[in-house]
Length: 184
Image 1 (cartoon, one colour):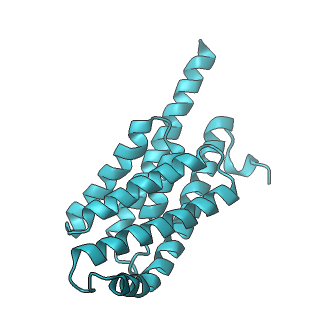
Image 2 (tube, one colour; image 1 turned 180 degrees about the vertical axis):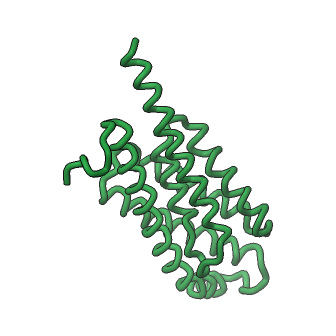
Image 3 (cartoon, rainbow, N blue to C red; image 1 turned 120 degrees about the horizontal axis):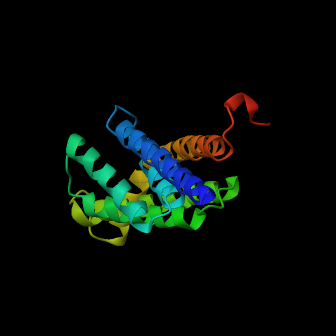
């Protein structure tokens, strides 16, 4: 019985830590930053990987994204951004509990790439900036390349911070050790 209680407490603590990290990432989104250099993609990957409950994996980060949009403003591309965000949560589910560097790096690259493809397609489809032709679509993607590098860099930085911070906190919670006691 005591072991079961401890497991439930650890699960609640881990969920609380994950939720706090997601909220921190959402808050960072509304601070000034270079274009597309935000923790949003990393937050979606992390949520898909860290939360045990499927409904939390999607609902909590989508609500955090919506809260950020309520502060910075709603826009025409929201459906595409949210769809892309859901895909990134699913990529995070693929990372799962196997949070090895190669899986996180691959998930980060895949997440940034699909965000680039989905949102730039939406820019081309929704706005009149580019002709509705193959050449217009290519021009739209070409114009978005600098933003892709910012997205990828932001996702990589924040994925490292989120996954690394969570691994550190998880180790403290599950082993009950102080930071100085953790072997290198």
